[in-house]
Image (cartoon, rainbow, N blue to C red; front, side):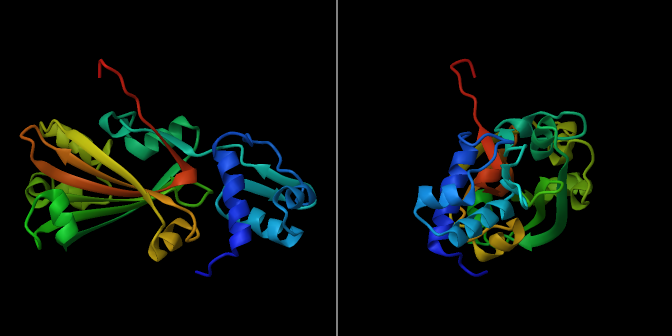
Length: 249
């Protein structure tokens, strides 16, 4: 996709930061084009382009003839431990979105693939090992996608749980199915930040200058064997990750 003008992108980034950090609260109005042009020492056409990019990111709503308003709903807030508990029929992203009063969606595809060198390292299996791949695009209804998530599961677990080959694995998803079989899972997660790849820009409806969070999560069984690995790519200003720590945890 075409690279946006650097000045407009800089203004977009600055305003997005003010929105995400709460300086511009949900439901509040952006300053006028004239005021923003003065603040950023830019012409009004550049400001207009920046505001349009903010709207494309789902951060603001442009009301023609009235002004531009920060969306009343902010990023989906997700506690890092959401996958370890089931709420109703859901875990993970769906729990977070529903707790924020929003309607989540997930688009899933399932296939078998051969592990390349990077995936083999994460799963601790030989390169070329066949694994089950479950790929999802997730977001909230009426807004651009929030994240992509791909889970790879080793085949002996799939043999025990053929339902993992289905798009719908039932209430609570794959982790509830594993628990029903007696698995007691332990998870570790690493988080980094990088520019998005071109295919991620297309899927997540973002520009090449919008950084994404990348999360790799390993799931271990009670024998400390890696049974699944999940890779998430999250649009930073659409999803807030929350971690809780304490000496008693």
